[in-house]
Length: 555
Image (cartoon, rainbow, N blue to C red; front, side, top):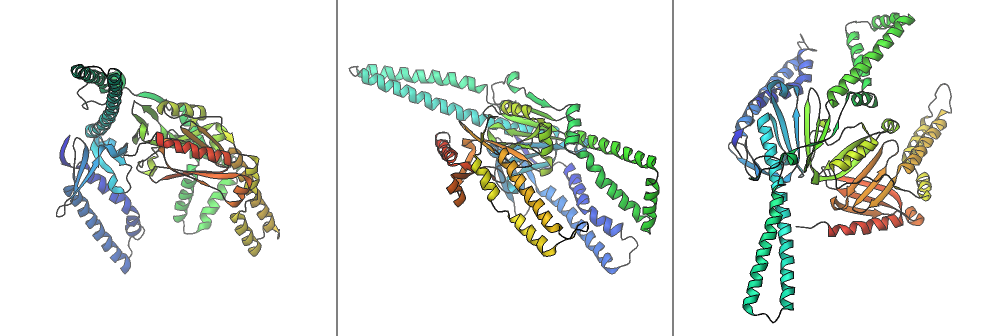
């Protein structure tokens, strides 16, 4: 439990830095590009800019003074405002994800930022400290995770106690019926013996569970063994992985926009564009100079791509303990994201054409809480995992999930249905080509060739999507794969689905096909669908989902 306190004083400097970054474009335009301008509108624009900066500075200081927070035994308490005081409570049981982001600024001052995400919509459902000491961040995370472990252990213990009491009561009732000629005193002694047995059994159940109440200290009076608290390392990136990732991600192409920006900057120094063009042409007249420039640019581009990938994905680690999954990445900016295992709603395995050729895949864990800033991509495991290793890691970190490599194909009638389905993209594009009739390479009838090329591309995409689409129902799991160029494998448990839908349009009804749609709790809500499955599979899917009532209890 922590006392009521303000945000870290360095959060003022952090907010000031964000203000400068957001105002950088205005500063360049008003004070660099318009230097020496005596225009009236520039003069008033600068005054408005000064007023806006002053208001923002006052707002930053006022927000820091009037905002306080505390962490009690069960929830975060956030207090905002001065004249009108607002109190916001975020229970620890609602926290879905915990993420830490340590930028260069944080490393410079030995601090970090931490974010607690819930499954509730809206910004009010998130508690974030932009700047916090490492010790306090560790303490807050242990407090949340420890309380969640306590609640889960208590729920399991209560379930065991109810089951034992019910079994003991049934045994006693059966015994009383068989021994109906007993005296009342003997019945009372039997009741006391049954209660003593319940007490001893409950004690036996409670004591082992006390060892599993969490893997963090200061959560329970019972000490947790070191073996329980240890994290298992499932994956750690190597230099070979980083090199492979730098080529797979095409990060070496980052040099192209840099060269374009550099060329544009150089042209600004010469009033006549012909001077710049003649300078470039003079370099390219000699074959050895051209070859040397191309070679240097290639090495520079590859080097920049490797450095960028190493900074972003270097020291990538996937670890887990009994209850949570931990994902850490980054060299200059360290980001750590933790997900509670039972909060994972689904798993998605994505393969782009390049990754498919190299046998790589990206695994994404879908949770009810948002992973925070989209730029961090922290709900994704390492984006360049070999497919076999990706499946192995999924089953290791989520033992309740299974990935089946043998999946059912679509019937041939689904291929004909997809090919015969009209394409509005082709119809609109062909209409535009027929109206404008563009001339390409001096050929006046190029419009119908472009139309046929587009039609062939659409048909090829539908054929590829047909062969990529697979499905399988495996006990408590559903596994769907679809996609033409980029294929996505979707794996989810029956109890994690909140809604399903089966649809059939007239052609599907005639051909005995159907489409299935699934909805999982996420932020935003995640929809997934697969089209043109046989009616038998759709009916089996419906019966399979009806079994969810035996697994999910509504409170």
